[in-house]
Length: 81
Image (cartoon, rainbow, N blue to C red; front, top):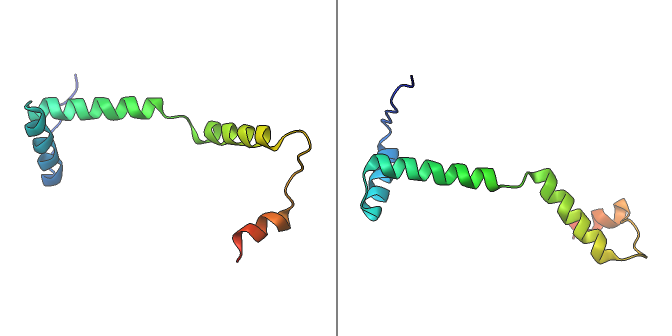
């Protein structure tokens, strides 16, 4: 059996109340809905390593067949002005 959730943070209560008022639902429904939405958003996120790999693949595809790797001094020059 789980224990009930009891949030005593005034800001959390105010935010939940505002959302409940806007949606014309109870505070409990507002909290549950907001948590469900955040969980869905988190589960849809692609891990950083996969996003970076996709970007690298796109860059390689744009570079074409005659592409060469950027030398360290060329890369460093992009960051100094």
